[in-house]
Amino acid sequence: MNMSEAPASLTDLARRLAPRPGYNSTGLDSVRLLRSEAILEDVPVLYRPGAVFVLQGSKQGFLEGEVYRYDADHYLAVSVPVAFRMASQASPERPLLAIYLDFDLRLAAEIVTELGARQQASRPSPARSLVSSPMDPVVADVLLRTLRALCDPGELAILGPGLLRELHYRVLVGPQGGALAAALQQRGAVGRIVRSLARIRECYHEGLSVTELAAEVGMSAPSYHAHFKTLTGSTPIQYVKAMRLHEARLMIARQEGPIAAIAARVGYASAAQFSRDFRRHFRRSATEEARWMREHLGEIV
Image 1: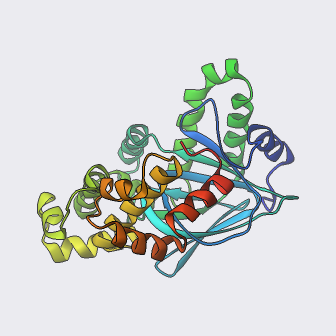
Image 2 (image 1 turned 135 degrees about the vertical axis):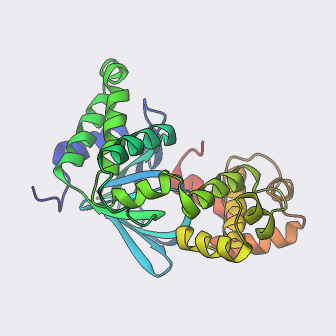
C-alpha cells in the first residue's frame, strides 16, 4: 500500500471531526484532532507521552541535531515528556490534519510487560524519548476504525476501549516500539530518570537542584546529568526551565491571572527574569504568545 497519502476516507473523517483550526476534542479524552492552516517554523513544544499521526500536511521535530519526521508516511511516538522544536507545513487549501493520542501509561506498561514475557530472547533496544516510525497499513486501519467510531457515539461506547488498546499495541510493536518500551519499563538508569521526570512534573515550581534530584533516585550528580541528557536531549536545568515556561504559557493563554502572578506560580522569583526567559524561549512576549496560541491552537484546555 502506498502511504504517500493517507486514504481519502481517513482524511475525510478527520476533516469532519476537526472542523475548527486548532485542537478539536473528541469522544475519547485521550484523543484530539489538530487542524492547522499555517506554515510554522522553529516552534518550541513540550509533548506528553503519546503518538501523533499526521494524515495530511507534514511536521518535523528537532532535538539534539536529529530530525524526526511525522507526516502521511511516518508517525511520531513520545515515551516521556520532552521539549523540542517543531516545524509544520500546511495551507488553507490543504490544512494539516493530525490525530494526537495521549498514552494511558498504565495500559502501555501492561502491554509492554506482556510483550516482554513473550520476547525474552530478543535484545533490548536503547530507550529513546522520541521515535519516528514508518506508517503501515495496519496502523492506518486502526486509525480509520477509530475515526469511524468517533463519529458514532453508540459505536464508540462499545468499541472505544478496545480501539485504544489496539492503537497502543500497534505503536509498541512497531519498528521503533522497542525504544519506547525500554523507557516505559522503567528499569535501570533509564527507569530512575523516568521516575525523576515524574517528580519534576509534579514539583517543577519548587526550587529543584540537580544534586537533590540525583540523590532522590540514588544516582551521583554526574551520572544523573549524563543519563538525563541522553534520554531527554536536555540538561536537568534546561528541562526544568522549559517545563516552567510551557506551563506558564498555558496558564497565560487560559487567562488564569496576571503574568507576574503566573511567573511566581511556576517558580520564578523575578517577573523580569521570567519575561526575559520567556521571550528568549518562545521569541515572543507572553502576551504575544497567548494571542498566537489562541489564533493557531484554538481553545486551550
